[in-house]
Amino acid sequence: MNGNAQSVRDYTYALAALAGQAPLSLNVVYCPPAPYLAVASHMLPQNTRLQLGGQTCHAEPAGAFTGEISAPMLADSGARYVILGHSERRAMGESDDAVAAKAAAALATKMVPVLCVGESLASYQQKTTLATLDQQLTLLAPFVAAGALIAYEPIWAIGSGLTPTLEEIGAVHQHIKSVLGSETSVLYGGSVNAKNAKEILGLPEVSGALIGGASLEVASMHSIIRAALGA
Ligand code: PGA
Image (cartoon, rainbow, N blue to C red; front, side):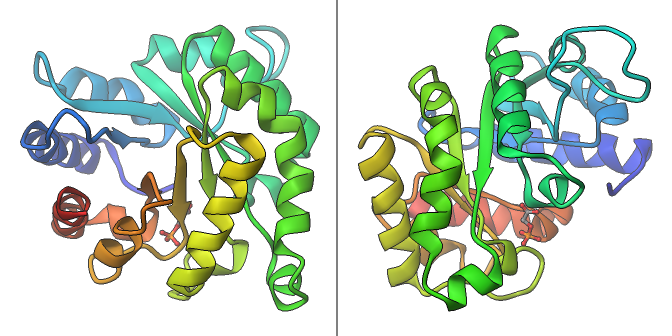
């Protein structure tokens, strides 16, 4: 929940230029707040490499759900991806079942769901990370088979400046791929920044990054995209 129409315009313009320099193997997706999706979409140059996404959606395509945004509405506004099950949404009461229903809605609209999973600090400290993830992944497996991406985001790492060790990130990603299939794209999220992006994206198990705070500045996105290219 950051930015305004002018900053979204400026950011989209700058990020589209950066994305345009990236090789085809790198997808750059910008997920602005929903009211600005159309603003960003109108800014996109023709044949741009930059794609847009939403930050959540409702499970129903339409209806009496005041204030909600459906998957078709996101797609209509230019989104090709949608982040689902972010820990900040889960903290507002979004259950595993709700995330699954939203994933089905996104796929029905031909958007790519980015399904967030991750353990709490308590789970990390009790070394129950994999069990926590297994519970979240069980319901999500069919959507991954249908094209969804997974974002592994330890809740305690989001916005905290803390990250698991590289060994831990690699091991968890390996585990997720062993559960969902070796071809699964697993992004890492949680305090990725211009400094640590190169080593995190350099891990062979890591397919990409979901970037929060560091994405707010074009300069740090520039560094992160360069790190992704070098990885
Ligand atoms: P962060 O956020 O990069 O600021 O830790 C990640 C996220 O919100 O998913």
